[in-house]
Length: 258
Image (tube, helix red, strand yellow):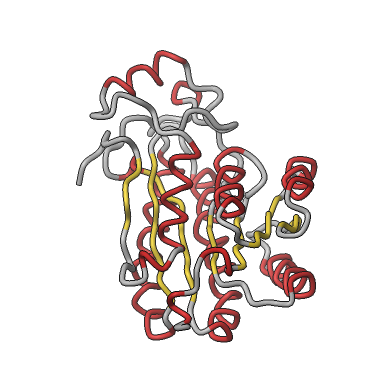
């Protein structure tokens, strides 16, 4: 079988920040499809181990701060030892501490360079580490998939998440430039961008009125769930998307179009 047609059920998938919120939905979506999943976590060990307990033969919890290259290398080493297989899919979902509460976020006149540095280190440096360290695995497997998690806010900014939005916009740039470089290795690099999700730990501080307003502004009349969002990430990892790379797909119920 052509490596590009390898089904999701035969993949070894790394989900960064894969224990809680959207990350948990991503991990569980790949596990549902039969994949083996490395559930990366930073501090949420109990949540990660709970996922493993449900899928003891196909899930492995590994602690690592994706901003630290040595820790990411140790994560790959642990995955290789446990599964005896190369990582073939990387989902960059890890998010440095952030609360989606617009009223509490610093405004343009207050935000500091430190806020931007913190978000860039997680979104961009973290993805750089995981992708670069996955390349030898992709080469061994003959193909690879990278799915970066973005946001619709850099196309339609509606709340003052300046640092978060800028970091995700930079991650989109990395998505497109890396897709060009890695394409000859049969590696696709894409982004899935959502709006506010109902509900994750990060969006728990969002008032109900905001959720209702967003739902009313979508053609589908609802706020996207983490499970709905995760299904699209599975698509980008599957053979169905083998001719798609360097793209950013908005998964927000049609709130932002284009």
